[in-house]
Image (cartoon, rainbow over all chains, first blue to last red):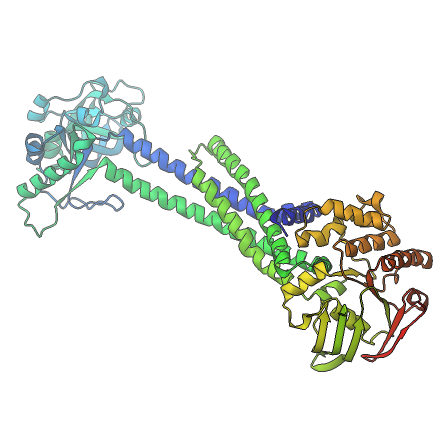
Amino acid sequence: MTLGAGFRIALRAMSANPLRSLLTALGVIIGVGAVIAMVAIGQGARRAVTEQVQALGSNLLTVFAGQVQLARIARGDPVRTLTVEDAEAIRKTVPGVTGVSAEYSRQAQVVYRAENVITQVSGVTPEFQEVRNFRPARGEFFTDADMRGRAKVAVVGKTVADRLFPDAEPIGQRIRIRGVTFTVIGIMEEKGATSFTDRDDVVFVPLATAQRRLFGVTHVRTVHVQVASAEEMPAAQEALTELLRTRHRLAPNQDNDFTVRSQADILQTFTSVSQTMTLLLGGIAAVSLIVGGIGIMNIMLVSVTERTREIGIRMAVGARRRDILMQFLVESVALSVGGGMIGIGVGILGSRLITRFAGWSTLLSLQAVLLAFGFAVAVGVFFGLYPAQRAARMDPIVALRHE
Amino acid sequence: MSLIAVRNVEKIYRMDGVEVHALRGISLTIEPGEFVAIMGPSGSGKSTCMNILGCLDRPTSGTYLLEGTDVTTLGDEALARLRNRRLGFVFQSYNLLARTPAIENVELPLVYAGARDRQARARAALDSVGLGERAGHLPTQLSGGEQQRVAIARALVNSPSIILADEPTGNLDSSTAGEIMGVLDRLSHQGITIVLVTHEADIAAHARRHVTFRDGRVTRDVLVRA
């Protein structure tokens, strides 16, 4: 018997009971649709994160004090070895560096008259504007002279400005941070929120002011290093690490007391997180595909019993056992393939609807579609095999007498 | 060479641990072109004998040569091939596939034979039983006699050596039964070997040899009018 003949028999058997066939295939339809839609959500999230991280600038190295790891919570403030002098040394000796900005940030209460907010107070150098590409929208940023004079001036982020001065003009107002009075001289441009932080919920003050007047420290927490091009990043990272190890007098067997991260590292971390999420979502969806396969097996067993007489007739006129096996296998695969094809449509439509109504970014991938479809076919073969074998092993005499 | 040569065939079934001797040593020889009626009460072993002749079942002991080949040693696959190429079955209850047009029912053996000109051959077989115009009808749209004629066409389509007919008129009224026997008579005149199981004397009268079974043995084997 040819495959084409087997397919025609399967088609006739399925169209004899269209509702039953549809309900049987429904498990596979939902399974394939769910896999495609879930993977699309995962991939969409990954693309969104990638775009956000890339928007931060691809030529940036960030040096953190201490051994911090992105996926874990950073330790309090135990490492005091990273300093402004380190930042200056990096600027002077590391090749390819075009800008350096040291930063000391902490959460603090900011008070204006009766209003107060808890926000991030960041002590930075004027170079911060170029290095992070983050500038005041109105007013001005502080200068090197303000740094030297430890001036009590502040530039507020959009979120802080909105919350602290809902009605008043912020520039020229006096605010108090940890008992010290600052004059607001500018408002930063709006950067918007990433998935993780509100980049406008911040108050910038001169680094020297933050260190001496506010927090009483001499070290910094972060140094942002801008490198001329992405190609020079690895060399710069290496030279920087070497420089800091020398400056901090670390013995060869000692760990770094700082961490250097490039945007590529950060991107990789987020990518692996979203990859895990995609796998998880896809895996859950795949379970429903297996459940769909069990539904096919159930109906195929019923079908084999119902068609015992037919099996006997076919054997009497010369069907071999493998002809019968193939006939029922083709039928279960046809159910799962049909379900798979409808499921692809459902999955694509589903991800469109998710994007439209939930506003989540989704990304359809051909790989996921092919994988889900291939899995559906495999499910059809796997769960069709047992009923088909049962049909093929029937005794023709018993089958012919079956009522 | 005889078409069918059965020697000392026994068939023992085991039902709930009890041995049932369905056939107790049958010997039977059938030559090409014979028209044989097998008769006997129910439980006499005639159906078991037909199943063995039809290669649907294997004897417990003894030999069965079909066209000189010992089929008792053949595997499932070879038996299926014999049923497909050398044997044609006609059943009491027609055994046509439901929801399948007459012509496709007739084509069925050709499908498993992997034949090419299936439609033309199936149509020729239907024409030979006078049902050429009803090729597209479903079994439910045909009368009992017509359904049995479709079944005969299906049995004929692979040009078998023997047609095995098990009570082919059992479900039909006498005039329709007469038509069916007319078809079988005509096939016999064309030289096709027919083995017919029946317990009606007037149906058996169409055959030229009567074999009677009783308690798993052949008790009578006579030639009747030429």
